[in-house]
Image (cartoon, rainbow, N blue to C red; front, side):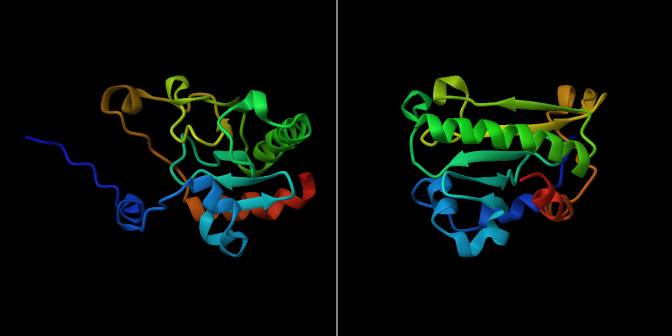
Length: 163
């Protein structure tokens, strides 16, 4: 007997048109589509976008507009700005989704685990005590207790208070 896990929300990922170029550059260059693309914030240096397929609900990324895969080549002003946004983002996640902790990280290069290695990005992943369980370990499945759109709207509504 084979177990079947239905995930209808992934249909959009499978069926939508694929972006031929860098997906982050696509988001950066399409400001008019911010709501559809899950963009929470943008300024002259970078933008913040919800991860559509998050590790945990509320997971978002801070991404520089400049296309680079080398953190060491990123202008220091942009790096410091990203860091300041991360600091504010932690406070935002604690209020918006009641995160008890936050993982902040960057996977640099394919060998470093980056899913989109050609364009650096910083992850902010909200965490809660006991937010992992046997389902992830045994079945390789994650269970989310809230809807993406609901979380997006909640975080977006609180963003002006922090940024």
